[in-house]
Length: 146
Image (tube, rainbow, N blue to C red; front, side, top):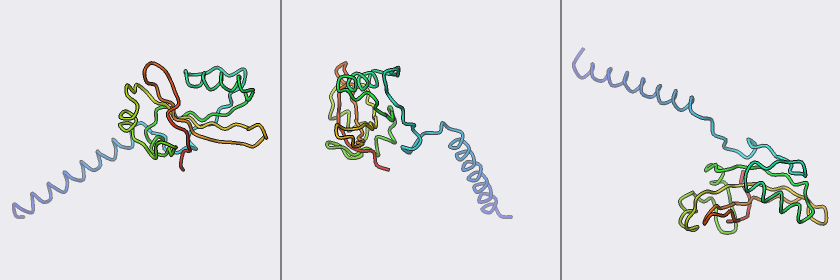
């Protein structure tokens, strides 16, 4: 076998091993949730204990409005779900876009809300909460695309 043939075989073997290692690393990594169906709906009622400041704000706001039985789907700080968000101000934003718009951005959270209106119609909307200047505030409202 010629020298070029031997190098070609070594190159192909090296590529096969490198590709196998890549696939192994990719499959053994943390499984990231990528669709809304992967996140469960949680009912917030009087007995619900909030897990973070945003859920506490949602519960307090629902108590004040008298619509305490509200369901939420908390996506948290998931960039893949942020890329599916379409709101009034943003359409499929990235984290760096949020950082440019909201000066002093420390954190963000995406939450789906499902509730009944005054005339008993079911409404659903996604809310992008922004943590900037040491407080949580609503950054945008819209929907999470499928």
